[in-house]
Length: 274
Image (cartoon, rainbow, N blue to C red; front, side):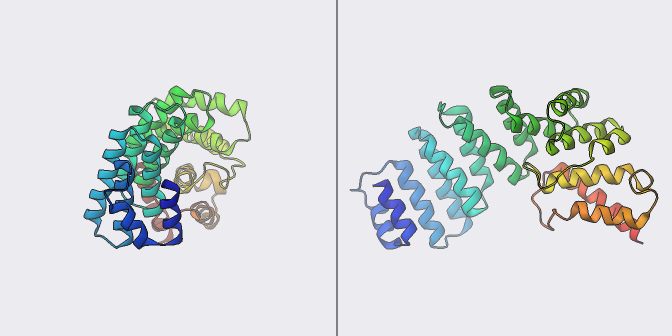
């Protein structure tokens, strides 16, 4: 039946889907019925408050039914299909990561939690997710780097983060994300010469690199100053900053700390252009 509901959705046969979902004689788990009712509300153009109530009801029933897979699907539905309701999505991913015992799905839950927290601009939630994920999977590259990145954004344990970033870079000296984290740690320590040195040969198209990471690169470059990174050439300095910030769209989803650094860099660039 679930496959049939999915097929009706894919084929756009909405009237048949609605008839099945709303038919109380059709045996469906409450969480499944609630999810499809939320989906139907979206299709019919329900207002945001109504849709949020439907999504919240689907999340509560999925949690009550112990339906971890449904919770993950609902979280992804919010982030990828609706590009909205990140608070509900975060709850869904957290439910699976911390409340429902599912060894098979817990890693997906943490990955979803981390991704959603970034999309939501929620540094605190991102920190909790990355630290707990790093504790559970201490050798996972992405979880380690995300935890260090958040620590540095928040200014927590900077000396420890620097030491760990050095060890990580020693084990993988060409890894661009590790170079950036290492440069960020030196920047937080006020050692701009070492920060600039760590930025050498970074590929901003590498895995894990996004608008937020480009902002960190730009903040370090800007703080290092025109003399240090452009030989005193103001035009070259501004040109390079523009190149570094090219991957950052006007309405990029940034964490608050990244947003503040971006505004500082933009202000500096505006002042230099006058």
